[in-house]
Image (cartoon, rainbow, N blue to C red; front, side, top):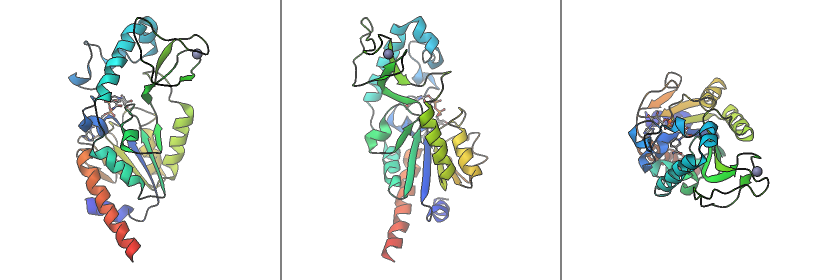
Length: 250
Ligand code: NAD
Ligand code: ZN
């Protein structure tokens, strides 16, 4: 099937990728599903919300400190690096991620649209301004916003919140013009992110999915790899490279 994918997309100039927690699974970043993602028996839905933050800032910050620590001990895996390399094979390439773990940037990807923010950034819960620098958060002396005195929170999208409008609008534009769209390591359940592959497909893009489990998107995909992204992506990139080098030599 890899060869068929290469044949189908080798002359495309515009590509987009949507990634979810699955691309980072091989780096050891826990997904929200499964026991590994639990902290002190809380479910993420009980912590990653404005209600939780208003009720108990300290417990929410303790959870984020724990997640920041876990994530800072992980490294990009071959899937992240392959996506950095994939970018070089298209004139127009955008990586859209639902992940907050910063691993795509660490791998060297440059055009990254972070739909759900970045766990290392902070912003003001009241005036929404980003707070520069990597603040160390000490739960018994929580920082306040230098501009308005409001409470500082992680700059990530919580359950029930809207996605940053400039980022999602750019992602829609990217999906509309992509000739090839990859959906990788996402359960394709959470909208609006999950609508991006379908928008691309409706505009005629070739839709390629990589996920060890079938998802609601699988029925619409032109190619579905039921596999780990860290195994398939490096192979795909190396085959695409081989054909593009052949083209250059001719
Ligand atoms: P999700 O809904 O995006 O699902 C993860 C998907 O990855 C599953 O469908 C699973 O089958 C697939 N998968 C597992 N291992 C894989 C592999 N090796 N290769 C390819 N695919 C693989 O993710 P979720 O954990 O339910 O999280 C939902 C939201 O929570 C995310 O969109 C994100 O905003 C946030 N989150 C982010 C991170 C992170 O930044 N790494 C981690 C957990 C949660
Ligand atoms: Zn403020």
